[in-house]
Length: 150
Image (cartoon, rainbow, N blue to C red; front, side):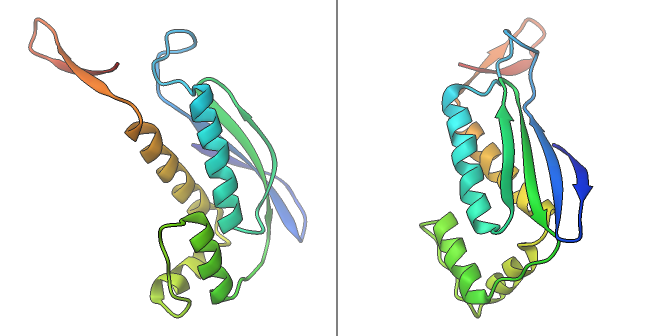
């Protein structure tokens, strides 16, 4: 994942984010974004943008093995702890945090940090992407094992 800052003003900054999967290349790439993966990536992006409000999605393009995302990031904003807890609940429906907890305090401090946003976003997407694939173990004549997507 790479990120590049685009022109800024006093109130916002545009960020170009590039996410790439590993693989061999077009056509033979076993690690491509399928239509299902593209929908999952977009759904997850919307979910995280709701948590990291008011970061705004300006544009995105999801190709077969990479994605481009352009975000509008305000230079300063602050949410109250009860708002943070509510947004966390919306992002993670099966989890809750109490507004007075240290976890909520930590999250409140991270919500205006684009690095934290991308770390959470790519970590969760990678986990879901890898979890939904199956692998088989193939051995060659030299006793080397290779995991291959089935």
